[in-house]
Amino acid sequence: MRQDKKESKAKAKEIKRLRKEQAKNQPKFTKEKFRRFMLGSKDHQGFLKPFCIYALLICIGFVYLNPILQMLSTSFMTLDDLLDSSINWIPSTFTVDNYRQAGGSMNFWPALGMSIVIAGVPTICNLIACSIVGYGLARFEFPGKKVALGLIIFTFVLPSQATMISTYILYSNVKILGTIWAFVIPAILAQGINAPIFILIFWQFFRQVPKVLIEAAQIDGAGYFKSFFRISLPSAAPAFITVALFSFVWYWNESYLTQMYVQGKGTNSPWTTLVVQLSNFGTNFSNYAQTSGSTATNISEAINMAGTLLSVLPLMIMYFILQRYFVESIDRTGITGE
Image (cartoon, rainbow, N blue to C red; front, side):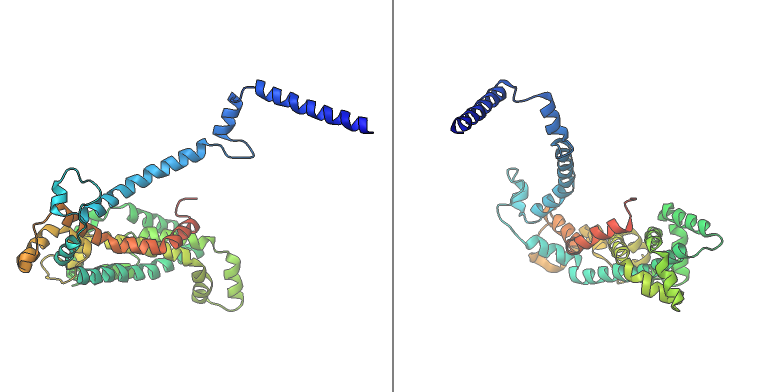
């Protein structure tokens, strides 16, 4: 028995020695190993695909983040730092005086309040009107439905510049030029800025709600409006978040139509927005410098960057707060075409 154990141990040692020698004689790097390392196999993912994805994301992120970081860095620079070619990113002295002067020339706090009203009220109207229209197109069959969908798509493709003159004359005739009603009334009628795409988003989402739920509610005695408010709307939160964010951002960033309809050139309207103030930043800063006296300096690139950052800062804060809900809502509403 002892001799058999010794022989088995000797054989095991011999097998290990032969395997080690075989491993030493084999090449460490082969084409098959390289292919598996780059392309992967059924068990694990290769190196090439993640590398390409992360490289692409880094490049796209750099394209978007570089201007923002450059703007942020420049906004804290003094005039000496701007003239010093050796300073590119980190200022020698951080100053917030640029933001004070930019905010004063833009009349920041009143303009911020009016921006929220001008972007928020039409957004709420868009949510109500577009959801009702989208629900009707998704749940009801009626003659001319395809024609209506085609007209909605056509109005989205048609540029606003093509109807700008006629719209201006219409608003002037009904006496809403130079007021916020120039944005609110079209939104109530589901014809606000980019409202057709909001209708299509709601239409796509309400089509995914099971008809069995609607039919069960109708069997229990629920009417059309009760089925809409009790069944469809509670499940449409992702669509509402998507439409609210897109609508708010588009109304916030709209400067030309705001100047034409809400401000109403020649009407002495008090309405303005931060984006409009930024577009007239040079003129506004000159007026501010004359009224503030010695506290204002000459306009510089740093003050321009501070004013630009102030105009987009509320949107950036809103996006960082609602980012998770925004991504989830985009995925669930199928706006990517999936």
